[in-house]
Image (tube, rainbow, N blue to C red; front, side, top):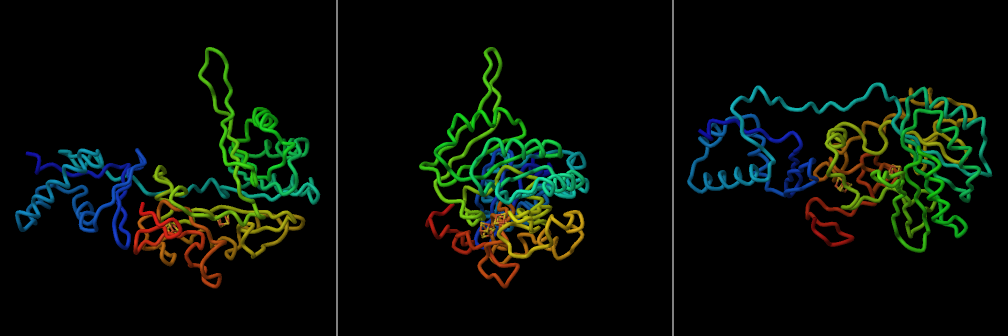
Length: 356
Ligand code: SF4
Ligand code: SF4
């Protein structure tokens, strides 16, 4: 009989309680289902339990009707399923720590006029030791292909498997030259061009007759200014991530932006992020390997969404990477990101006045 079966919440789904509403997130399909807190609590009770046990606690006819409707809804949308033997469906672990990767990503500001090759080589050596994989270059001088070729050759010697370049628009750097640049550097995945006349996105594709086209990278034209990195940290509905189950788990204990991140500003100063004031030495004299041992530096890594004012009651808190550089109260390390206008009490993005 159906009621004797066990209810299993699909391992691709997570249920989160916010202040005013709860949400089921189906990470497999990137779908959201807003539900009341009562249904959130019901799913928590149901998961890995026999339906009959929960149904027996229902007191009146109306509750039974709502229960059956809700059950049909989650089963029809494949958010859950029913099984005979619950032991065969253990919960998927939420463990996320990767001890091998001591550093996940690095932001390096580069100004050709201040660039010192020896310091950059030493930095790349340390990044390799720390198994750093994601590199972001913020190019503060003009796009100079020859200079960037030299930089990328050095990055190629590291463990980098993702590289993006952020720079400002200039008329001499044409689309064709950027396409060619991406084609020549397989490590380079994205180029972001700020202050462009129009917003647009182009995929650079390798097409050979008789074969499937292969995407080599993307060029994104953005119509606002890079403003020395002050454009970073914007949180809006489009920036939320509803497809990464891993990110959801990570945001429960780690900071979505700053965990295992290091930044080097144009002068070689070592920071958590170029827009955070605190400095922890300079690559001219200091090794980033030593900086990672400093608890003051790593304190940002563990600031999670459940600790941040307002965010801790937001139903999107495990979909939102956070920003610690631009916050509402600069004296409060747990203050809400100032570039987010979402109000979890009203469920409104207040700068857009749109309910999502
Ligand atoms: S802390 Fe904020 S400004 Fe710094 S890199 Fe992260 S999102 Fe950008
Ligand atoms: S309130 Fe916090 S968790 Fe919610 S969307 Fe804004 S920054 Fe993200």
